[in-house]
Amino acid sequence: MEPVQPINTLELFPPLSRELIMVLRALQLTDWSRPTICAPWSVKDVAGHLLGGNLGRLWKVDDTSTPRENPVQDYDELVNLIHRDNELWVQAAQRISPEILIEFLDLTDHHLYDHFKSLAQNELARITVAWAGNSLAPNWFDIAREYTEKWLHQQHIREAVCRPLLIGRKWLSPVLNTFMRGLPYNYRNFLAKNGTSISVQVTGEAGGEWSLVREGFLWHLFVGRDPRATCCVQIDQNLAWRLFTKGINREDARRQVQIDGDVELGEQVLEMVSIMA
Image 1 (tube, rainbow, N blue to C red):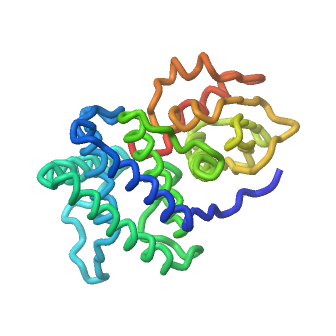
Image 2: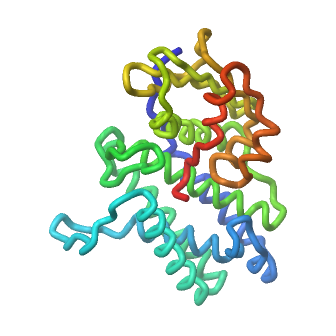
Image 3: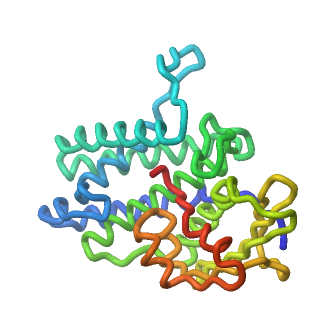
């Protein structure tokens, strides 16, 4: 086993954007109203959400800005706030034609890439990756989280309009690697004796192996399999990304996941959610 390392997703943003723009430009007018798994959002709504995400990221707030009158108190309140903001963007985007929406997405994707490229990757970002912990994240992790967001919603659009998914190793491996950084936080309240470990194997060309080890009062994530693992969890790559983004319910997923060893310990993996939901 080896300690986990930073994830470099920066150079995936331009090609991921090109893939999205190609799909959107090929759509028929009726395709834009097709329903997606992000009910009640349509294809156009998801595209509008992606535009809102870009604009929100690019909005510069200086250090003298007035803070929120009522700061967010907990995770659930943060999720509710994000959902309200998302819905406002989606409603606003309904007044934008598909052609202009595509142009806005293309333009803001370029600006977002330039912004991310200007950041020192190991310096702390201004926000947390809340599904992985309460501490400020380094920029590389915040950027990787943004990559997973853009990748995921593009898959929602592709599924809705019957286009092939981007699930080759180039695209999906960084997504899974980023999602797995939520494992220590997912187990934060699961008590276990020192040395307890869980090995998680995601099968498929984009998969990999990770181990979570209890050391003192904390869980630590490593790359590779712990030969002394208390339990081993095996999950297919296409099931994994859907499970960790609430694209499949836990009960259906459990029937497709193999757990050897301590079942209760291993089933906690199925509770992990690597999006703000």
